[in-house]
Image 1 (cartoon, protein in one colour):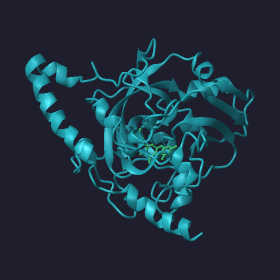
Image 2 (spheres, rainbow, N blue to C red):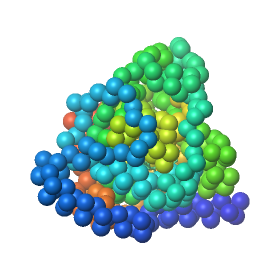
Image 3 (cartoon, rainbow, N blue to C red):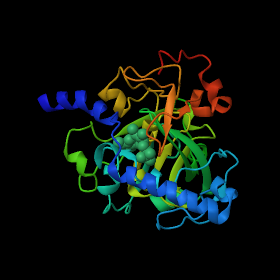
Amino acid sequence: SYNRRMLIKKAPDIRSSEITPKSVYLRRREFIQASAAALVAAGFPSMANPAEAQGGGLAKLPNVQKSPLSTNETPSLYEHITSYNNFYEFAPGAGDGPKNNSKNFKPRPWKIKIDGLVGKPGEYDIDDFIKPYTLEERVYRFRCVEAWSFVIPWVGIPMAEVIKRVEPQPKAKYVEMTTLQDTGRFPMQRTDLLPWPYIEGLRLDEAQHPLTLLAVGVYGEVLPAQNGAPIRLIVPWKYGFKGVKSIVRIRFVENQPRNTWQIMAPSEYGFYANVNPNVDHPRWSQAREKRLPSFVPNRKTEMFNGYTEQVASMYKDLDLRKNF
Ligand code: MTE
């Protein structure tokens, strides 16, 4: 339709908007002042880990183990991680729209279906789904395709353990993950902004990689709605759009699934979406990134977002320029 054509042209432009939401800008001033105060009050070591005393007053997750797979970079502030989001089911574009439009979101009841080419398909209540696993805190770098970045202390379960439990069949080569379709809970699904529901995919070996996480929390608490409650995907060496939020289905398939942004703009977003400073997005450079709360590029982007040692071998036979 006419509308849809307009949106296909427009949506990526909205996403790449460089406009600083006023609320984030204002908090940046507070952040600088608060940091200075903390520095004076408690000395330098407290600045190295603002993870203590961070959170949003949501339910604490029990028995969270710290993971050796964490980066020792300083985590971004909770306030920033939860106020600058991308979640089209709540609001188009990046910023504080998802936070403002998700205040009444209820992440229960919630079911997750496992199906496709697996020995043990099933449908679980979210709490039963998570129960068998030990929750881990993984502090990961997070790099969005539009070049902003964070360091985020996710809490989650390794996807590899979930996959082992459901026993994929030999024919399963990919995993497809789908967001809930519910216009009552996700207001923007009443529009044709994206082809709903949001879908993402990984190759089975990527999904089984020890770094791949199904996150259920951040800063030791359950996920706030805007970050993908109650469960979302985190693949730290890929651009942020691979991290499908509010998942209800994990399907094992033989053929490469098409993901939402690939469907919207195939020349701009590929299946792999590995962070790669040497392959630019058609409309902007990927060489540098903006570590929030900075809104100017203030860091070089690293190959595979700094996870080369752990993941490069998976792509040794792949032309990363073609398979972007
Ligand atoms: N998942 C759904 N269902 N809908 C979305 O719009 N946006 C993606 C990804 N997952 C999106 C989504 C994009 S583009 C990014 S960068 C990350 O979520 C942002 O995650 P964050 O808000 O927790 O930083």
